[in-house]
Length: 504
Image (cartoon, rainbow, N blue to C red; front, side, top):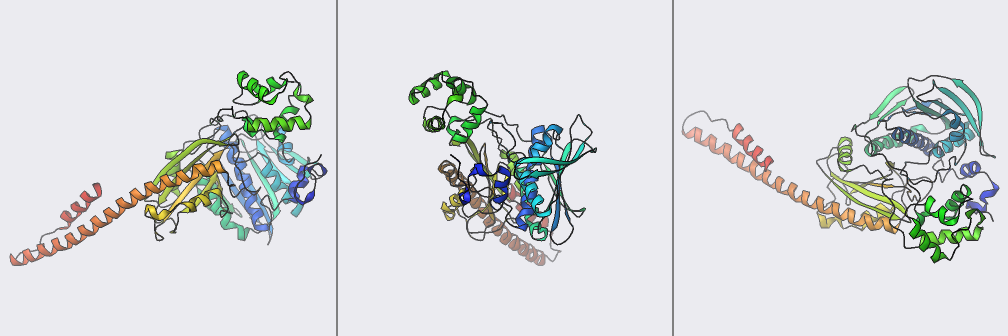
């Protein structure tokens, strides 16, 4: 039986590369403007992940060259550890390259975004993807490669020795695009990326002319994550098939205890009794129906503990408040966090910052800035679970008016982000996520209410002090006139009154 995909095609009838190309609009490459933006985003995410994996503070440079009205070259360079030469062709020239089944927070799946951009560029310009990489142990190599769309294999056109100033990778995609319309999107993406990755330095050059630089706002790298085994509640049929293919000789009980977290001998025995399966049976002998039954049992069994959270790395209070304050003019900000919790066995943490300041737009409800695994989500916000949750809150109860510049920055980190579509711009309405988002927003609302009351009292006190200072100067002037002397200076006395009020 073949799996059905959009348009009625069977997935087995076309290669993954051809499937992704045909569905490029869903993946964020639907028009020339989106194509430029999505190319920058995918390459920058790969670079930031590579630097974080190596424990280095990222320096990522985006170079955009426009040759004519629609010919655009995008080069993204980083200071990561570089890509081992034996993996370059497969990592950038094969869709869905990789076979790791560990759960870990990442911005994206390495190679998939770059490969999607390479496919789009190849089809629209007939130009190869260019990769220049260098590891600690090498002198550097430059690759030019195409993707065989029909067979989903890389075709290396040339390889040449070419040194770099140090380890890292540069990837260049030539494509048909509209950079003039995409420029504001690219700038906003880099600016908001510096909020979620405040340890990174991000530079943008257009036709070799520097245009913008963001960060770093902190010299503290993210807490390293620990790759963990999948949780059994997230074991869908396709994951089980891939895991079984590499463990076909294992007995069922050994497969369960060795492949999943939160399954020890006792839990595995209970699960197998629940399923009425022989623990000694080889998983390689399972039929499709048995794999499906095993998946359903793993996802419905209620005897598993919650997933481990060491695989997650939230921004944290100090770093999140610092990055928001460095990017916007903020007079007040507060931090809240919920979790760890999980949906379908996928652990997640939600954290947020509510900020007030002249650099933020006024609105009847707080302006929402969304992030998922440190990636800014700039579009398709109307159907996002966080936007829907935000609008369920009666913000007037907390003293918010339409004239107040208040914004909420929300970050979801998870081993699997439930995007609504492959374009990765909005989060699906998962009940478990919404159940954590609502109390998070209410907690922020209460903090805003307290700050608003304090600000109102301070404004009232300052108004009274100004009226008193005016009267004080008048009394001093009249007294000096009656005494036929020069009026005394009252500025230092008035200033001391305002200083006392500021310290209260």
